[in-house]
Length: 166
Image (cartoon, rainbow, N blue to C red; front, side):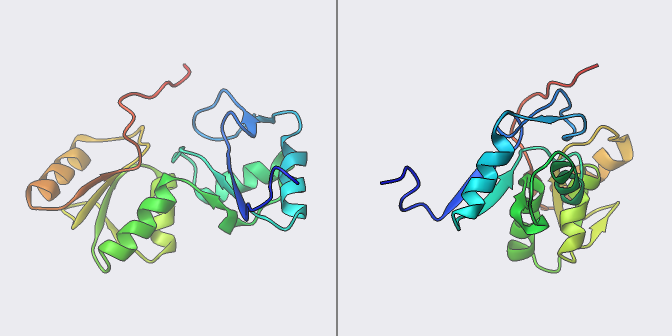
């Protein structure tokens, strides 16, 4: 009997489980935790599906995948997920054809565009908030106007604070 009997898929958390990095914005400069690359390879070789997940939304999913590959992990882009990917899929299902105002960077915008969701700079049907270190007053004003007009306000994280190195 194996510990994995009856398990069809394994979800791996990226930050702190597969990688050690001091960069909250991605895996740049990260190093795999000892045995992590081999563990993922063993799970994959057993015929089970794998998924890589992180709560980060700074870099695009494509950048995360490229960075993971650069440190030795084998993965297809479809095997990566983060809150921005989940949000984009949810918006596509629940708000098809509606515009989205994003308070966030490329890592939040890319999954929306990948699904053909239109993003706008002004008033929108939906407001999505993610990692954003360039927020401006006009963007904040547009988000408020949108929400006051009835747009749902969605967030990729409910964390009240982020720890960022200086």
